[in-house]
Image 1 (cartoon, rainbow, N blue to C red):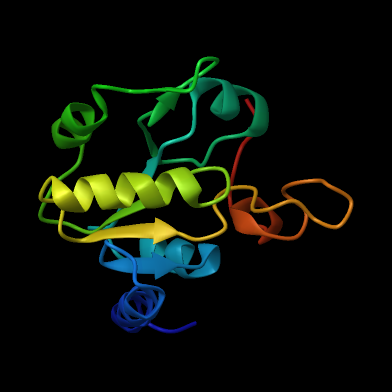
Image 2 (cartoon, rainbow, N blue to C red; image 1 turned 60 degrees about the horizontal axis):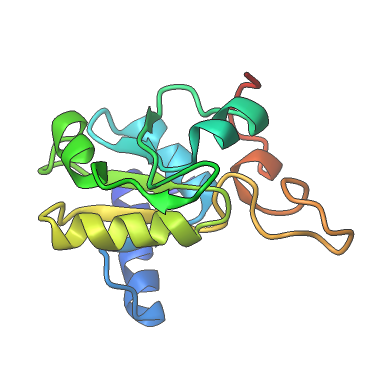
Length: 150
């Protein structure tokens, strides 16, 4: 696998090509390698507490809900919690179920001064496969990356 610096540059190029409002877009395996190689990269899981409890967690991730279950109302304290637990000067990688909420979180963080924000495309479970199931073809879980069941 490529070095973290190369993977981050690739993610930055991908984000520019996709017209995204944050620094970079990573595939799950790329994010994992960056987290393994860099002591400075920070992982933030923005899924709901229910998703974390029922679907699974990524060891070492900082868990900060972007939206709260069951109403899915925005967490009005998201940015203040992020600022409290995450170093603004270091790379921060966001993950959710499919990459949509984490993309929104990366955009919000970028706007709030977290200039080294990355979204993990496909998220933890990815989009549904041809049988309508998540977590089998795409995402962190399907890539065989570390996670634990609650």
